[in-house]
Amino acid sequence: MSKYVSVDPATGAVVKEFDSMTDSEVDAAVEAAHSAYLSWRHADLGARTALLQRIADQYREHSDDLAALMAAEMGKPVTQARGEIALVASIFEYYATTGPDFLVEEQLDIAGQGSATVVTEPIGALVGIMPWNYPHYQVARFVAPNLLLGNTILLKHASNCPQQALRIADLISAAGAPVGVYQNVFATNDQVAQMIAHPAVQGVSLTGSERAGQAVGSVAGAHMKKCVLELGGSDPFIVLADADVPSAAREAATGRFANAGQACTSSKRILIEDEVWDEFLEEFVAQARQWTLGDPSSADTRLGPMASVAGRADLEEQVQDAVGKGAEVHLGGTVPDGPGAYYPATVLSGVEPTMRAYREELFGPVAVLYRVASAEQAIAVANDSPFGLGAAVFGGDEARAREVADRLEVGMVGINTTVKSAPDLPFGGVKASGVGRELGRFGLDEFANKKLVRKLR
Picture 1 (spheres, rainbow, N blue to C red):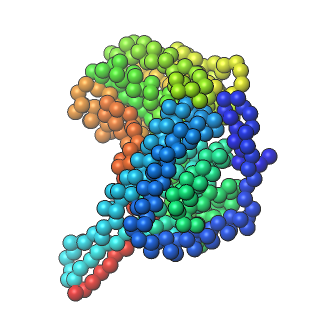
Picture 2 (cartoon, rainbow, N blue to C red):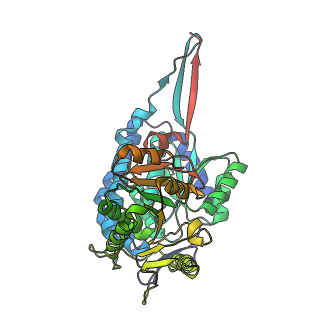
Picture 3 (cartoon, one colour):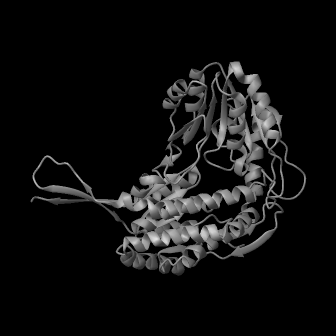
């Protein structure tokens, strides 16, 4: 079977298959990226920003067909898919319009004589390894700032969304990107390691699992290459006793079940203070019932299939492990009859540290609710995780909610809101959730040479 296979997750039918590249093709792609870098880095800044704006325009022009392809290839409901495309366009446009402000030379206030300036420059060809769950957004947040800088891109997308990988390359080419500036590579894992090790490649960015991050980080470290790793999450969603419970339940359900729960920043662990436990549980289950399964190509569908039967099987094993050890199922929890990778909105409580669901990331539409005696216990449970990506704190007293938020070991936290991505907001985590940041001015600095220019007179 080909390495890259497009499967309709709603039916299980194989749609298209694509062969992996040969080693010589991969080497040629790296050389082309390096050759393009030598000229692209010196291209007029206006030419680079104009390219980014044209890419944004391409995304807006093709929003409907891109959303339809997402629905067909990874099961994202088309309404949510259109939202992803709109976000992608805004990211490219943000770096086209605001990005140049981040490239202005910085004059340092120094103690010695003369002057010192820091200049922001590109570093070379980069490898991007991207996942299937947000197949366009994940690419955009890596690609947009680096094309602005003058770096070039070798993009290895997930093996189950090859049609979208090709469409991204076509869009960027149609926008006028010079040959070699952006290339899609259907590479194997071994070939990815070879690309990272290649002297012409200067860095790698991966969004994926903790295991993938360890593998890529190991190769990058061995070859002294800069890396950004955006990995898994098990985000806590804390409901304090003075929270607006209906609002919190609605936000928690959206945060958990959007994209079939297949998001690193999904609200995976919902921690509720004892005083509002009963009210919140009732409200949340009522909200979860509204996330009914349906055809992802329908505009009315909120919960489509998971991206693969294999992913659903992993989730089902985690749920059954928890139930077998005493967890309570309030909703869902059973694989439906019929074809495809469908799994219902599921609500669990009574999950304990002995269960896989306590420590592992649940990458699907399963919410775990924890009853806690106090904010102190909520903080302790929230931080008792190998992950540290995002979090949310809901409470009527915003000052108290902020105090709780400040004690959470995460890279991002929302107060009376879930973590929502935007072009100007830095994205990233701590602990096993990875290293580095994307988006905003922080994303522009990850693969930049901050060169010091010193003059004595």
